[in-house]
Every structure is written in structure tokens, then in C-alpha cells.
Length: 250
Image (cartoon, one colour):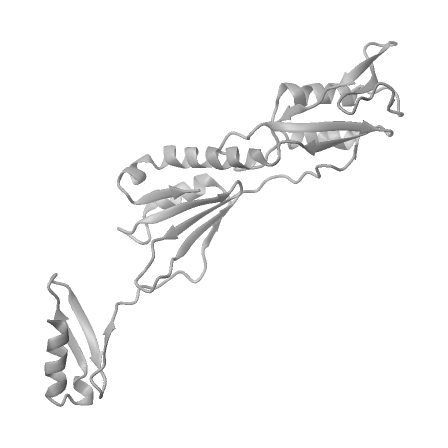
């Protein structure tokens, strides 16, 4: 019907100021077309302003507050993309031109720690207390590192898994103990609102004394961290998800 109507108007020798054609389609929608001198028509679609740049947030709490406030894009549907353990995006659905608007970018602030690098005992003690959550193995490492008696770490009895070190066990006594390996630690590596994933690490010591922590789970902790973030968002945004306004993807 629209095609025939445009052809009819072209046949009436439309003047330049009459080349905008308003038509109501079979679904009752108002649509506007332009017709050039050769009778070629093009639909004029309404332009929805897009954000010049996404809103930068550092917490999941801030993201949830933005979504629940519903101050922008009223009655729009969105995707929450958990890109990785430290990044979440709030994106719109595809528009008529196949573009997707990025409204919010959330970047977790997590402390930096150099894995695989040998740290002095004092530096390592501070890092374990400030950059790792409390676990039994973390507390055990603190006890070992904080009580090492000798500067030289013995290599005798080192089977590549466990090392023997001498630690102070009393005012004037010392005992040899095996440094545990692997150890289960939970560093701060994702958003603080969610549980920090626990994973395996290799702990080694050398003369100084110095200690190093090596990641030993092949990066599997990242999948757990992403899952934790998705679970948290799903719980906090349950009503928005049920209504179809928010869809979480990872």
C-alpha cells in the first residue's frame, strides 16, 4: 500500500516543497518518507540521542543504584554484560541502524600484587594482610614468614613441592618446618561486593629471606569471579530481570 501511494504522489508531479510524505501503515504507525525527483523514496526515522560517552562507575552498588533510579531511557530494555572479573557494561538493545548504546562502564578497583616476584619478608607480610582475605593458609604463611629465624633458606629436603625453613617457636628455641604447598588463598581480585574466589598458589622462599607466590590454577578463578558477579547482580536486580528490563550475559 505504501509503495503504491508513493508512486501515485510521484505521478502528480510533486514540487520540491511537497516531497515529504506522511503515511499511516497497516499497523497504525505514523511513518514519514522523502521522494526525490526520480521517484526514489527513503523513510525518515526518528533519531534517538545517544550518550557521547558511558558513565564511569567503580562499584556494583553504584550500578544497581543507577538502574533502579530509572532516570534515563525510560521503558527501554538493557543488557548487563559481565565482561570479566573487573568489568561490567550496561548496554542498550540494537537500534534501527544496528548500533548498540553503551550507557555505563563499571571498573572494579582492586589492589595490585606482583605474583611470581620474590618479596622481602616485611613487604610480603603487609601484602598478605592488606591484599588477601583471611584464610587458614594465609594465616599459616604469615606465621611462617613472620618467624623465619635464619636468612639462608635451606634447600636440603626440598622436593620441589615443600621447602624446609627454620622458625622461632619460643624465646630461645627454633624448629624446622615445611613450608606448605600448594596453598589456598583468596586475594582481592574482583568487586568487593562479592565473595573473593579462592584458588591454588605455589609459595616459595629463598635467601633473604624472601618469598614469592605463584598462581597455580590456570586462571580458573576468573570464571568463578564472573559467576559470583552474575549471581550478585541477579539477586539485586531480580524485579528488573523478571520484568524483562534487564538481561544479564557473561
